[in-house]
Length: 163
Ligand SMILES: Cc1cc2nc3c(=O)[nH]c(=O)nc-3n(C[C@H](O)[C@H](O)[C@H](O)COP(=O)(O)O)c2cc1C
Image 1 (cartoon, rainbow, N blue to C red):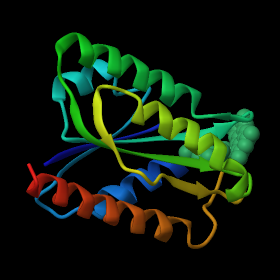
Image 2 (image 1 turned 30 degrees about the horizontal axis):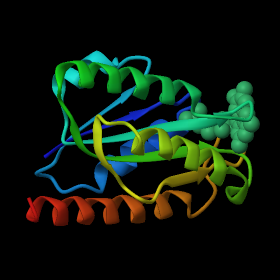
Image 3 (image 1 turned 90 degrees about the horizontal axis):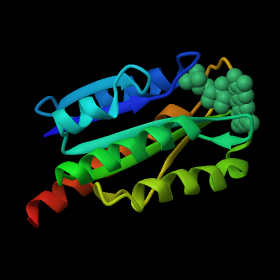
Image 4 (image 1 turned 90 degrees about the vertical axis):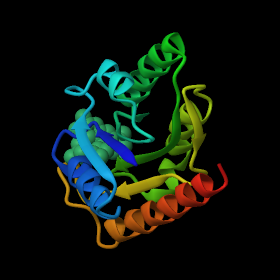
């Protein structure tokens, strides 16, 4: 199984989270990690992973605009080539209180769940709160994220068994 984890990290927090998430998968999983500014939708459409984990950040009261745009481009490319990615998961980093960013996360999640290119989006999203804009994460945030990632992995396995 191949998983790409993409982030839009400015100060390294989203990158760190992406790397931690990557470590939760067993060694027979091929994990690739990159920044959306460096890994184009074309590369992902070519490389075609089984799963896409896409991260973004809340900045200027907007939820992951660059990641959403990147996803839209990927969806268009995959539709043209008539290809799909089986499963997806999103994560969002933020400085505001966790309950205040659920709307941003939900809208980001909806973008992925409505994309015809991603067959199934994991019903839960990850939010991870930083202490200041530059980080670090509050205590427990990475652990929460890893728990969801591990549940995501079990969910993928169940889906694969039913194929
Ligand atoms: C210009 C700017 C605006 C920001 N605006 C918000 C905001 O409106 N709400 C919020 O929760 N966090 C805001 N943040 C904090 C970012 O969410 C935080 O820097 C980011 O999640 C950290 O992840 P990164 O190191 O991967 O970039 C802002 C950060 C910057 C740099």
